Image (cartoon, rainbow, N blue to C red; front, side, top):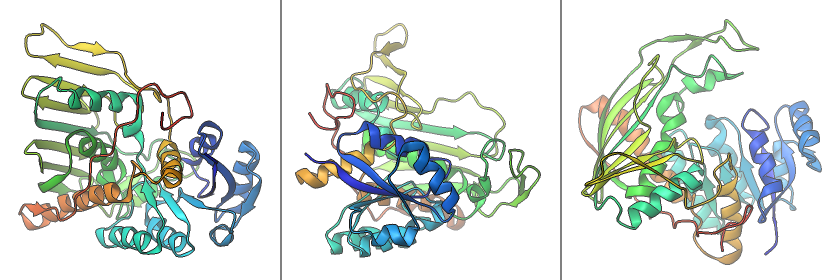
Length: 367
């Protein structure tokens, strides 16, 4: 196995953990980074010993770069990904795949037509916590999944993020920002979704940034910031979901899966570790279980490394374009259901990603 040469576009807030991934995983090597702000790109290159600093267009044209790792803001994902695909490069993009269903489908179809691969964050479902949950479900510890709940409630990101405006643009909000973590985890654990309904609203039409360096800037909210809905899975299980940037505090679990023989408490899907808790019929209390898999620390880049190895071995990659498009399809359907007052049938589907093997050493993807 060789290390696939990767170029990073977007050197902002999320980039350090991905640039670190080039030192961790055996299947990728980050050879260049790019940003519209060349000073920021140079600073990241110096910090992580990346050999080349390029403009985005230079990186897309560079024959050495085999895979583009797109870490730009959501509204730029589709444009950059499509340019990379046209240049014959594989793509791994930050979530969401796109800000609308049409752009997401174009990317998946373009990659297939060009004979390249596309993958997308989140890859947290490959972490030790959620992989342990997947094994417990597959091994029958809670019986047949009957239902699920998924809750992400906070008061938004303007108190800590240095440039939070995009969270309140179309393609942002709690659904498109945090929904990919929760929905990808649910699809990984239970399978694809066939139908959704929901309600959505904007509670605060304006937000005031209280983080630096934009303290005091007023942001107009363009997208729903409180969404609640129901998911009907193809398996027959029924899920309840709330995504909100309008809540000051809550004491709800992140995700729970309810089965015919027990209940599984799933850890935060925006993390890689535990805890994993199980309640089985006949138990007196919850049990906290040891994790069966590694990658319990922040391991963003795991999905890109898996993609690079899958390309070389010819197998399917786990954080796939089909999975990301299905999640995008579901996310958009919630607001459509709210606007129309009807259930929305989900046209797309996907396979549950193959679980990671047991016993991997750090940096390894396949046994």
